Image (cartoon, rainbow, N blue to C red; front, side):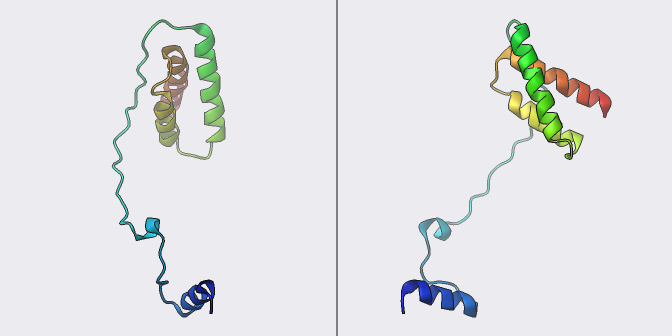
Length: 103
């Protein structure tokens, strides 16, 4: 009987397979979740084109997440605005402010 047949037979009988991959044998690692900031830090001068691009992207993101709670959408937008250019982040921040005012 081949190894695959043995593994299928053991699985059908409810036993664990004796062959494990290295990834399955490792203990799971708990990931730390740090609290997200509810503010977007904007630095530098504001470029109007980048502001409008960031705002357009944020509006599209809100439209795609319309079934999600408002707080979750805000968290995702703020998370996406980190490490972005200041003008782009300012466009995202304008949408976040509108969402916070509406809720």
